[in-house]
Image (tube, one colour):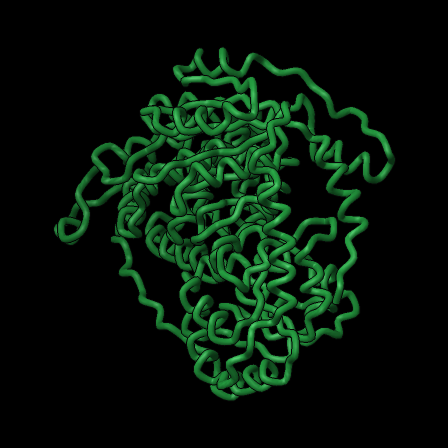
Length: 558
């Protein structure tokens, strides 16, 4: 890379690709996930000698998912890179996932030269138009000197509430042009707190409510608001439920925790929602669990606490909006609330039922293994700070219901875009962010085969984590829904390779479970292995319909 900084003043110039990398370094970028291509040659060359490590993946979708999970865990935008055409289209699923899941991400694509965009041209697509629906902002670098402004704006937008994806398109001839300029200084954002009059109004509503309930979402995780939220819950003794992506915002062991809400079937936590006369949402995102499911008439009073104003929805019309830094706002609200309520006996009764059902699978020895048993054993093996990543499928529903967290960002579920294939590449990024933690990627056999090629990436990089496959030979979630709707299933079965041999062919240590009793010792051995491992786990998805039947008979004693 040619010099920059003071040396630019002395007459040195970088090309645009080199200036782009200098700007990314200025933003604190550690990794770029992606594939080299003809139209991003100058960017790849500019990385020579850079402090940024390029992670060569086996598919652009895997690269985008890695950047997605990196952004979700760190709060700093993950960066992914592709070439033009098919490389860019491959990138889009992970970009869309980050955008809807609220993870900061910067996608950079190569592009044909500006001299051939006006005619039909090999591999040319209008990528700015294509990425527009799946990003917060996107643009093309046309003038080299604009690069610092574009990069600074991209990171500011991607990392501002609600975080999401930004796309930068770089034509190959522009990448090679001389580019005067230098990275822009980073701006510090001041902490904001909701207005005092709004805090007083919220405190009054809480004081008047007989059965308030807190519904916490991923925004509270992004805001690092767990400590402040727990302090409020403990003072006011208000029951709290979390969305799938809000797991761990309040420990599942807290006596006021009603665990996760968001299943399409009714569950114990719905009894708490049915009884509530005030809902306090904290970092709640409508995309995860529609308010029409818990406030269909739009009559339930709501206090909205978030980093941005409430979305417009006829079932979500807050009485009070507390917009600002969530932690600071929660602590301020705690001081305004003078009432220290007595614990509600109903919450304790509800928790007893939930815990009793959860514990009943501890000694289950059925084989194939029940999903509840697999998840119960996972919780026993993993430490509170270890990270489980769930792919999308029937297992996701069971993880959302049964895998409980003491701490935030220890169970990652894609529940905005809900993209299959995220868990395995996401586990690689998670281990890079937290090398001292154990990482488990839980996938169905369908989701595993969508990005299984990234096992080679893990082997090449020496990244240890466990791929746990729920093996049922079909698209189990769709089978579940078909049976619920039509009483039968169709077009959902497929064949699989021998997963153990498949893993071993790429240098991954493979295990195949033959009994429920083998699950915990196999998990322990796999987690201790100094490299990526895979566990082939036959699963009994007969439990899906049993749960649906049970949920349909649930009667709340309100």
